[in-house]
Image 1 (cartoon, rainbow, N blue to C red):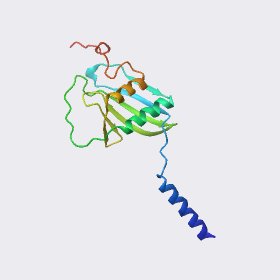
Image 2: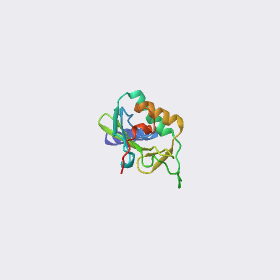
Image 3: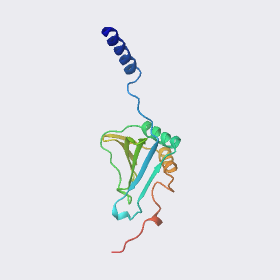
Image 4: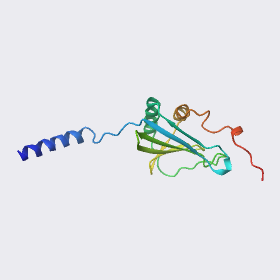
Length: 147
């Protein structure tokens, strides 16, 4: 009887592994936070998007972006240091953290070491999903500081 249970267990394990292994949960929300250096004088931005369709479309688009490796040289920008943090979650469980560079290269870092090259379609989808007026804040929303 024990041998039969072991065989059935092994078959189930093989079936599970053969079908792609563990199932990655689909995100149900994304917390988007804009980070900017103090020199830009931007108002903080933080919003949680809970429309599952929009969240999953953005997540899938991010995962589908092409990976890049090696050294990337980005020109300097007056928006240097501006980025968006994306925290995708399924319920209360965080499933993926991403960092979207808003300066010139517009790279998306997924986790610690996976770097992707964005494109205009992805940036447009991001702006629509985040419900922000533009990817880069208008100059009029940046307060000037006199020294």
